[in-house]
Image (tube, rainbow, N blue to C red):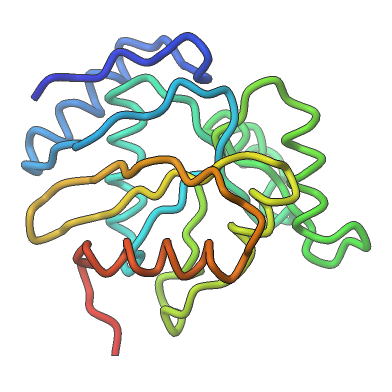
Length: 193
């Protein structure tokens, strides 16, 4: 597999060990990456379809193989010592769903605070849910004024397809529909009922 050289605007991690682990994991599992990450400092990655813990392992392998630093949201109560520093080191961003600021506003603030941020989100929520798309990923991108990069898992083909950036953010329902349609081109590890 030919590995993408990341553009200079993307947040990166230079670690030969994690790069070796990521690339080896993808080779051993027989997965490949189609497409490229755009050379942008900020965007939301919508990972679809989401049905398994394996999705997280594949995502980490892809990120590590390229040296891309990506972030994800987690419940703030998980960021206690010694787990908190580890989660932050992996890209975790603590969010408080009970905050009067709201999740979307917390993430908008995070995007405005940082010069570079690639935020990974699973629009279908947790792997055990109904599979219906939640609006958060689209609302976060719209509020922060950053594009969405759909990353489509194809378990049958063993590929992660990086689609084109979605930059038109004015219509949240249309954004959700577009990403849902793209998700149908992929194949989940576990089909939802």
